[in-house]
Amino acid sequence: MTVRRSLRLLLVIGAGALLLAACSHGPGPGSGQGAGAGTGTTTTGHTTTPPGPGGWSAFTLAPGADLSVVSCPSVASCLAGSTSGQSYELTIAGPHAIGPVGSAPSPQGAVYLACTSLSFCAAVPGVNQALTFNGSAWSAPTTIPSAQGFTAIACAAPTFCVTIDGEGNSFIYNGAQWSGNVGAWGAANDISCASPTFCVAAEGGPSVWNGRAWTQPNNVDPQGQLNAVSCASPTFCVAVDSAGATLTWSGAAFSAPASIATEPPLSGTNASGLTGVSCPTATFCRAVDSIGRVFSYDGAKWSAGTLIDHGGALTSVSCPTITFCAAVDRHGHAYVWHSPSNS
Image (cartoon, rainbow, N blue to C red; front, side):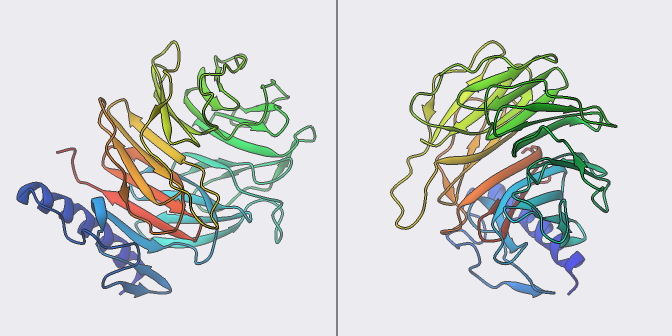
């Protein structure tokens, strides 16, 4: 079986399992299986499993890689980056390595990336480099001399991206070049942009970009560190923290943190609570945590966590629509959820 057929089958099986569960009002096929359990199919080195808990299917994207970010601009089209500066593509044709981002053959550090379409992604993989992806290859790196170790990037369009480094320097991409430092308030763990005039950075506290400058972060979350943020619009964002809580943006301010996950102590693991979140709309979000669980938001409440990754430590999730999500972990695994409709 080819890789192309394998991934297409994975998506079809996942959709079928969800439909079957909806019709039978019972657990779907694979319920109770762990990631990598069951009758897997090996194709050119990539192992897939039938849908498991919550309809999520698991497969090996990059064996042994510490995947730190995934960005999906559309259904079944994603880019992932690792802490060692490598990048990987997941499409209907299957998963494959793209190669190093930045100075080959030795990238300078973790890849932070964001995609807005099948033919445009931007990444900041090194101390002072920025690159773009055209759908098939990374551009040569652009050096930003005043940058001091990028920690996050977000893009609202091929003509707008924003990044922040470890010292609070922020730079804007206009589709052709990067601007000088527009200033921020410290390193950011994540950035999400609903438009070129509205972004939120998860810093010491949330900071808002209004098209001209970043607001000073306020201490809305004294109990934890903000790890990730996702904005569906200028009036709806969700931030998640290291204590397992979510904070919701209403258009004017963030709510107080509301706990949805309790992280038990893990021997030998640096648990960091909720590690990723993605909200394509105000009534659909997925959040992941450091012990392999996925949490769902329906516009009113969060579900209990569903364990899809046993001991893998999920690091990032991306949902371009309400019918498709992908998550990655620290051991090179990817998890895909696909539904043909919102029913």
